[in-house]
Image (cartoon, rainbow, N blue to C red):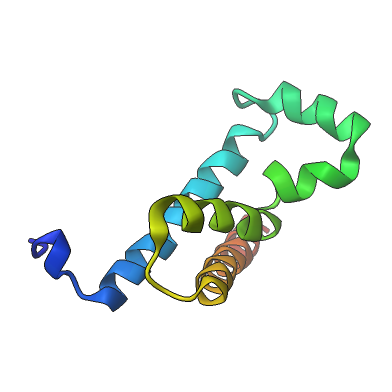
Length: 104
């Protein structure tokens, strides 16, 4: 189905990296929701450091620059850093808007 990874189109690979990073951020955020595996940790952390909770594990848009930086440095994406971080943040903002629209 896909060509050999070394022969993959760079734009195609960029889109895959952005999607992977976004999905990882959504996974981490969902693990810290109430009733999930790290829900108690999130509630206790929010009581002590409320300003730290949102950008670390509660808001997928706020998490984007931090987790995208880690992904960018660990995987070695072949595009500009700001383009990658902005694209991941934009995709997460779009996902957040769509989720908010259908949840209400």
